[in-house]
Length: 81
Image (spheres, rainbow, N blue to C red):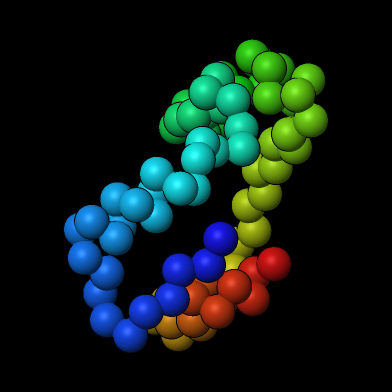
């Protein structure tokens, strides 16, 4: 569904759009799953069995203001993918 308008939609339009969109495309058991720590998710194995990939990668990029600014720009432009 696409909702386009030149200005901010009215509260009634917002409500109508939300009601028309229906439910989410995943089960309630997945809501808030990533709020748990990685170690508890790995021990639970519920998400892995359901086909979700748990990925935890850490890489030292460097230090200092220049590294921070470059990293921030990469995150904002999705270049880390």
